[in-house]
Image (cartoon, rainbow, N blue to C red; front, top):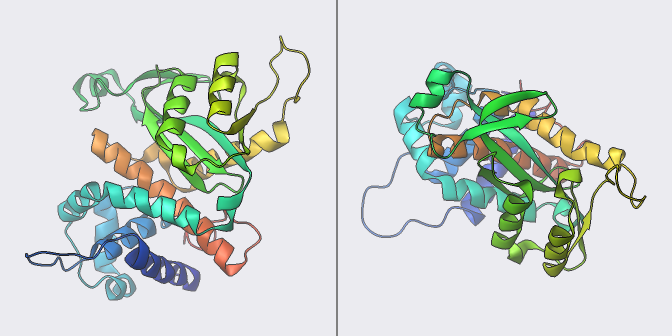
Amino acid sequence: MTKDLNTLLTALYVLIDDHVVPPRTGRGRRPELTDSELITMAVAQMLQRYDSHRRWIRHIHADTEWRAMFPAMLTQSGYHKRLKSSQPLLCKAILTLAACSPSWFDDLWITDATPVSCGMSRETVKRSDLAGLASYGYCASHSRWYWGLKLYLVCAGGGMPVMWCLANPKLGEREVLAALLENNLHLIRDGQTLLADKGFAGKEFKQLTAAKGLQLLRPDRRDETYRNGDLGGVRQRIESVNQTLKGQLGLETHGGRTPAGVFTRVAQRLLAMAAAIWHNWTTGLTSKRSLIAYDH
């Protein structure tokens, strides 16, 4: 464990314990591993690039430094069950980190959708517990078909997640994003600019976003007169955010096989990225989305 990672996890634990996890009330035995420790451990797992819960728990048990940080350790099945039941806390932690970061006040939000593959074979598709929720979709950036879900992400310019959801890839992008914005209407400020890609073109969608107080900005299509150009330099930001999730945080190898499992693993990765951005802001690092100091 590096000194930078130790500092991040300590600061994150304090923030989560103070502002995310509510105090326990009522009767019953208190768990030895608290919810604050559990969420901190989930972030550490992603920053250390352990996609498998089993390998991560085995690594903690074998390393004296990690055992000293998390003395009350769970088994692999116990960790898996506790983590799935903590989905609301994971989502609340992401939003709390976003609100504590200066990027929360960015006037520019960026949105995009990226595939989350959940199966590679026909037999997996037929037997999966995700049947009925996941479906086949086309990934234009890799020119290939996949079976799984689609991650819709709205983030600040520096990559800090603001709102997100998972959806069937056969659903229309404008339909899903409209529902996501509607469910998070309380987070939208008047005059906020939302940068999207060409797939979100259309008069109705522009009117819908305007009614929510958002100014929609997107690249021009080939059959349109010049308005904004291709916006390639700005659009590259969201592409780099997706690359961080896939390349450094292992989004494409999440390993989830149930709806709750996929949701939890995606939330883990978004929380790890949010924690790194928040800590980099706190420590004054120039590259706010850099994970180099925490992933080894």
